[in-house]
Image (cartoon, rainbow, N blue to C red; front, top):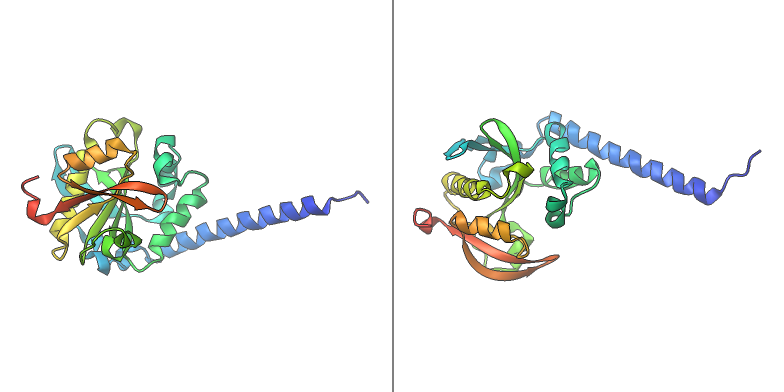
Length: 232
């Protein structure tokens, strides 16, 4: 009988078990998606984002569409593996990494809803719309009830660096203020190192409020106030 290195065998078994668990997690998330337990059924904290109407922009019709794992995972994971995206989102790697990040939101209470940004029918960006006042972020700034935060990732390389982010950030902030009457301001916290992102928020009518030391990054706290919506 050939000799088997028990440590190698154990390591191989652990690797197989880990992969099986990851595959089971993906299957579970897809099953949840198929039965309808996704963001649109638990979005009361964000005023039913699934029902938010499209809006017109200079670039075309824009809409936030809540993510469905089975439909959208591969595309979002592909975007997360772009080196320029991974530098700030830190979600590069196998699909399971992105699936876990999405699943944490989709399995939650609706305080954060992952969305695709769809422009003229084409998915081209990834968004997270979240209750900033219920988020750990609220520990780092004077949060107000119903403050709503947004995160943005422009998916296609060709869409970056030409002002598209500025236009879409303004459109998304307007959607929040239109559909969330209790929200008096939209909040963002881009990494200070990400100067194109900070510039895009400024161009979209956000104002710089403060530098904030968050776990893992030093951020620019950006605010778009309802009262200044038609001024900035």
